[in-house]
Image (tube, rainbow, N blue to C red; front, side, top):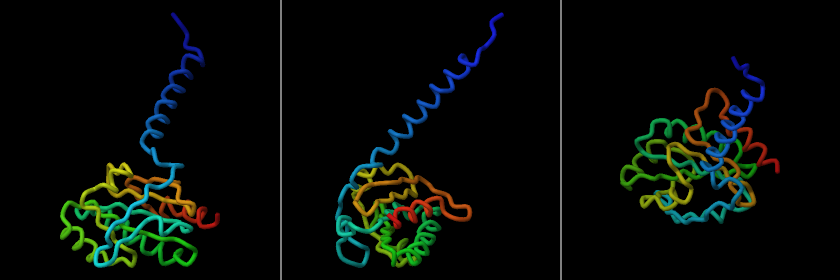
Length: 170
């Protein structure tokens, strides 16, 4: 009968942890890199270019009109924008709907005070590796992606709020 040593238990656990980290790192390839620049038309407005917000902290909130969680998150982000906008926070909603009418109707019904941008060809969504909704991408003042949150559910204070405060203080 063989006894299991601490090393026999620790090695598989360590390998599992390394594998989990590798999956996480592969899942967020943009973190630490310059945010891909884009120009999208704001619903009911002009073109918006991400690089024009350089020097500010930017939240890109990717959403779809069939996503109920997206509606709540966009409303939550509007409150965050009102609070931290004077400190240099900019929020853009980015719709990846196929139908411009669906996206426009959803954006109007949400009624937020930040630009809602249309990405009907999903080119920007592909550049940012958006694979589920809602997804938040947080870009620092230098234009680098610092955080990505996929389906960030809030129970009380949003998980991304501490990160935004830290970036606004930099």
